[in-house]
Length: 316
Length: 316
Image (tube, rainbow over all chains, first blue to last red; front, side):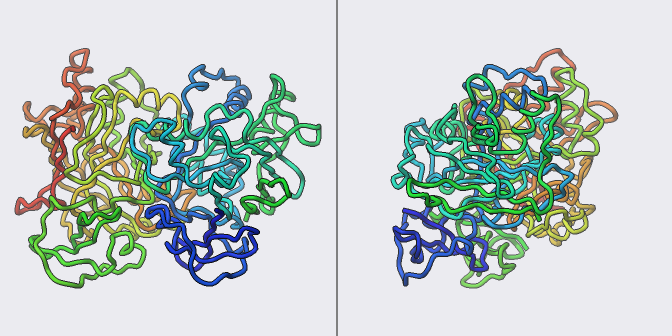
């Protein structure tokens, strides 16, 4: 099943269930995705209408919880290496995770707000939306609670993050509202969903040029059931909790990946390219995003269709 | 106006508006507090009924955002001193704040779950619930968005916190769901509400004995408008955002406060007493909470009535 939420002037929007070909949709009986998750009623009722992904809000325009992991430890290792720090061994067994803004997700085509001096960057990620998860759930129990899979642009303000990291209390300023992909998909409808991961190339273009093609199923040290169980160790998770994978990142041999223009798989955020530049050339060369810069994020099925629709945002 | 949310089997409960004497209530027309905050409709309609605070959920049983400050820098300085660390000067001008679990607040009389080996502690705090706050709002604009004031028991798992602080990503394990006071009150009905702070003794009893009597209006370095503006620097805040003050803490002369049994104002969490013990005696003596330990948190008006009702929790 593929779902979306149409803009209707309310904070929660209007749930629709897509047809098999994705060209039309019908209203979800529950009214909103949160209510469908609360009640388990994902049925459709009412008249069929054309589906237009540009009319979509994020599937959950406001959610009660967003916990973002850093499952691609390769990415974290590069960050550390670029600033001359060693990655603690525990990072390979104990996931990094922060609680992010979830009360006002940007729509998939909303402009990215913010002061360019803050160092605006995208982070292309995979995310899941869960049903209720009891506190202390095992990874197997967590796996059974995964209701929907989607993509996420975890917008990051790079120049504000170091000071917040030093305080130890997580991100309030460095992680403003993110955007979700227009379409959320049940795992059973995703051929690339296996082993608790979404396999396939996560496509990221920056200003119309290929920037990232990393495979989301590769180099993911912690699968989603492990991330969810980590999140639920001391708290239950309410239905509608969003768990992010962290920036998708593939390494090459034992080194960092190359840009697409050099035959590599590229990157899912600008910071990673800047880290590679720092390691190789002594300093970063690629700037963060400036007004007018545009990022698109999507993933294709075997027929070339954007499974989750496209996140398409321009810095405002 | 004084509001509460009655348990009715749903995740959001049923909003009620209290009578002037607090002995009865009428249903809120909006149905839930979130909807009242979304629409601005705080009217009552329907039959009057007796009000029983033991039938209450937290006023917002699930909220889209909870950001907890550390406004009583005295408390933070003591934490640092107990572990031999110096407080950075910036802590007096730049608030510490983390995003906490908001999807499943405990009811005011729910047992406190958790493994005693995690080091279970209470933190008695003041909190406000906001209307919508635009990104970049000034403290004056933030002040105008404060809709309700209430109390909060920010349950903390002390033995899990040091490892999370070291990771820098904030608290996922160390801060499980908190409990809110049964009653939320509009600022205009609080004689102690001035200068963006709630003045008055925040009463904390542990196992029926006075443990804390600190004045919430004293030694609060950052007032609520400042905390809200800090939270909104790079993100808008949706209606229903909860902003916490951090553990209320008063200092005495230039040193830490004394226990109530020694003529002091006591503490709002066990950790602070343990820090004072560590500074004075070389090691902490008071244990964290064990099964059966009970904490009550309330604040009285001039007539001795519990303004916000009472948080009354026992470790389960």
